[in-house]
Image (cartoon, rainbow over all chains, first blue to last red; front, top):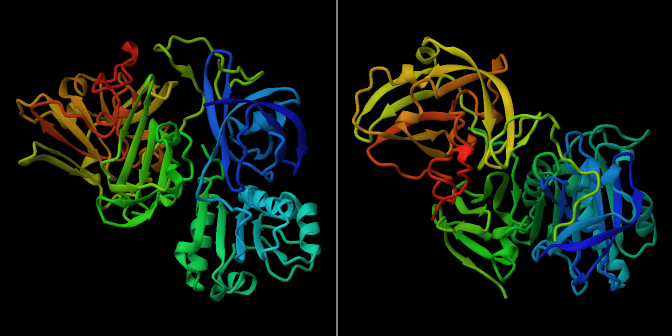
Length: 243
Length: 87
Length: 199
C-alpha cells in the first residue's frame, strides 16, 4: 500500500519548516484534514516512518503538499527539510483519517485552533474552502512561539482580508511583536472567550498541535461551553512530531 | 502519579488501516474497563514502543495492542467491549 | 519494491561492531513506552518478591539503597532493532535480592508501576545476569528511562528489562507478560533473533 511520490518543488515556510510539493502515482485524492505516512529507507534496509498532514486542498492533478517542521533531534525531519531535492522519490501511505476532516459540504460555523505545526491540516481546510468556493464562516486561533515561527502568514493575511467571513487571531507564546495587546504566553480562558465563536452557535471545532497544547485547548473550549462531541482533535505527540 | 503527555491519538491509524477494511478513525468503541464510549480517534495512542498501544482517554486501560511481527500481525482488542464502524 | 531514499541513514553511527543479527548501532538512547511515564515518589516506592500467596521479601527505597550495589557496563539490544553498546549503570544484583528466598518455582513475572509486566526464567535473572538499576551514566535514572529503578537483563531483548519495576511474582510455570502475550517471543534471545512469538 506504499505509493511512490516524486518531489516536484520545495518551498521554505520558515527558517525551520519546508513544504514539499509531491506528485503521487495513482493518488486516490484526499479530504482536508487527512495525513500521509512517509517512509524513508536507508541502503542497508533500515527504515523510518513518520506522519505528516496534507497541507494542500484536494486537487485533481494527483499532487499534494506536506509541510514539515525540522525538529532539533529529529531523525526524519532534518532529512526531509534539508537533504531532499526536486526529483527525489519518497514512499507514501494514505490518505489516512476519516474523522478529523472538513468537507466542503459543511456550512456550519467552523472554529480552528492550531498550536505550532498543528496549523498544517487546518490550512488544508482553509484552502479546500477556498477552492470549493465554500463561504461558511471560519475563525482561526493560531498559537505560535513568535511571528517568524508562523507558517503561511501571507496567505492567511490575504484570506482574512478578503472579508468573506474568515477571521484570524494570533497568540504568541514566547515573543510578541512590538505593541501587541496581549503579553506572551499560553492561550487561556479569556482569550478563548474573546476570539472564538460563541458556543451558542454550535460550531464544529478542529484543534491540532502537540499533545499538551491540544489537551489544554480542548479543556478551555469545553469550559466556555463548547460541546465535547463537536470538538475534533489531532495530537502530534509531546514535541509535535508524529510517528 | 502525574502522566506525561507523550501520546498521539487514534488519528494515527496508518498501521491499523492496513488490517481493517474500514477506517478505524471513524469507529466508536467502548472501554472494557470503565465503560466509557468514545471515538477511536480520541484514544491515547503510544507508537513509541515495540508495537502500537491504544489506551482509553478516560481511565488509561489498554484498549488495543498491535504488533508487526515480520510477516504476521498480532492484534489484541480485548480491552474494548466493542468497536462500532461506519461504512 | 521498496524505494531507497538517497542519502538517508537515520540516527545511527557507522561504527563497526559485533551486533546481534538484524540490529543497528545507535548513539542516542531512544525512549520507548507503552503508556504514560509513572511518576513515583520515593517515599511510596517499594520492591516486593511474592509467590502469589505470600510476600517473601520487601524493601522500601531506604532499605533498598542500603543493599550492596555494583557498577556495571552492558550492551542493550532493543527488539525495534537499535543497539546501544557499553552503557554504564549502577544497581543491586538480583542475586542479592533473591539471596534468602527459598522457592521451587522456576519463573517470575516482573511488575511495574503502571500496568507493564514481563516474564523471565529465574535462572536468567541470577548468576550475575540481572540487576535492579537506579543510576545511569553516574546520575539518577530518569523517569523516561525507567527511574527511580528498573530491571536490567541485558542478555535478552530490552523489553525484558522492565522500567519502573515494583516487584516480582514467582511462578511455577512460564506465563507471557505484556508484550509476550501481544506477539513477542516468550524468551527473547537477541543472538538467536527471537523477536516474535512462535504462535
